[in-house]
Structure formats: C-alpha cells, structure tokens
Length: 314
Image (cartoon, rainbow, N blue to C red; front, side, top):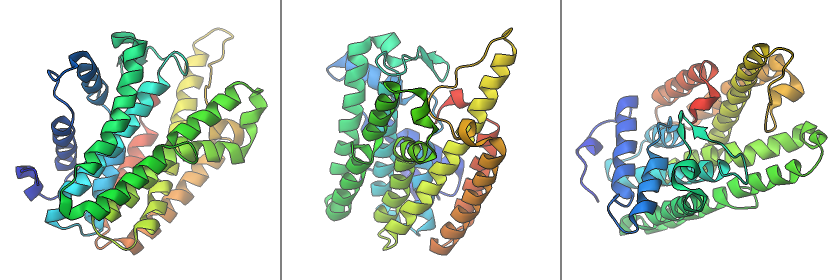
C-alpha cells in the first residue's frame, strides 16, 4: 500500500475527502516531466481544472457508509480517481470541435484550444486508459475486487449503456429533427448514459471496495444521486439561459442538449427532484452502517446544486 498520513483520518470531513482525492490524483497521474511531456502536461491541465469532484466524493462517502476498513481505503481511493479520470476524459472529448466546440470550461480555455485538437483527442484517450490502469495496479490482495471494479468502469464507459453510448445517442439526435428529443423516454435514457451511469458506478464501486454484499443495491442509490444532479443541472441551465435571453432585444437563448425542464416544465422537475431525494435518502439509510454523514453530504449537495451555475462543471 502506498503510504499516506491522511489515510489515518476519517473520511467524514469534506475537506479531508477532497484533499485525499487531489493528493491521489496527483500521485497516480504521470509527472509533467515524464515523456511525452506535452501529453502529460495537457492531461494534468485537464484533471486539475477546478471541478467539484462529485463522483469521487460520492464514492468515498458511500465507502464510509459501508463501514470500509482502514486497509481497504487505498482500493476505494483508486476507484475514486479512476471514476474521475473517466469523467474528465468525457469532458475533454465533449468539448472538441466535432462535438460541442467549446472554447472554455470552468472559466479556462478548453484542452483543444490550448493544446490543439489532436492533443485533446490523445488526452481523452489517455485518461480513459489510465483509469483502468489505476485499478489494475491495486494491491494484489484485492485482485478479485479490482477486476470487478475494472469491469464496472469499462461498462460505465462503453457503447451499450455507458458514456460513449450516450454520446452516440446525442449524435443520432443531432442529425435528426428537433422533435427527436421531445420523447421523455429518450431523454431519460440519454441522461442515464451521460450522467447517471458514472454516479451509479461510483456508488457500486464504493461498496465493492468495502467488501459489501449490497453493491448492486448501492448502484441504485448512485443512479438516484445522478438523477438528482441532472435535474438540478437542467433547472439551473434553463434559468441561466432564460436570464441571458432577457438581456438580448428580441433574442432567445440556445438551450442545447435535451433538458427535462423544456419538455415537462419547472414545477414538474422540482417535484421529481423532491421525490428522488426522498427515495435516495430512504435507500441509503437502509443500506448504511451509519448513514448520517452520507445523508448530510447528499442534502448539502442538493442545496448547492440548485444555487450554482452549470458552467462551473462537476
């Protein structure tokens, strides 16, 4: 096990949790002076870009709720970093000119703007591969759990029900009429693949790392968490775009990818969020060894999401 004095502390403190995530991401990524230097510099630029680290935070909070033992923490931290690396890889690819063509993310130039389009493709690819490598390099005592975590990560990334498949759905819709996105079923499937899948995987991975026999049930908790995040994002995005549109004489804001608020209305989405949070709390309380800190984390995040800007990222 890699030595780390912070591992002796409780994960209950959000400050400690974030410090652990940042420390281990820095430790597990190739150093900036390792060849090829430009690629590794760009990878680190993408990773250390001010994100909220929601997925790895959730993973560590669920691990704590499962009663994870001290000697299992390294596996949980590796899983947390792997999930974050895959998430960031998806953002780097989403920002490319062939997809969203975004010039900035979190107030900084996107990877392709600063390092070039070809390098951005390589950064995304390298982060995906490195996420698997991080898990495959876990201590040998956890070989069986690590293999299970690799399978979970690859499934959450792939084309059938993962991030890449979600991007594929977006491409199909982009080449079709706008009415394609009016189907609530398609929107739910798209959001499940683009957003919910990594949250679900994070919660399930936490339980696996902790040796829990309730890993599949925890995946549902993670998916509910992701659903709440997506609904909050849709609300804040529409509100911010509507406010921007009011500043344009006779103009209207572009509302981008599928959004639940546009098809169902704000009140319906707010009601669903309340129902999702209630179900999430119920399931988490039933599964946890000690649910108090996990529930506090969920409640605090729910409140913050409703008052944050969608441009800040996650």
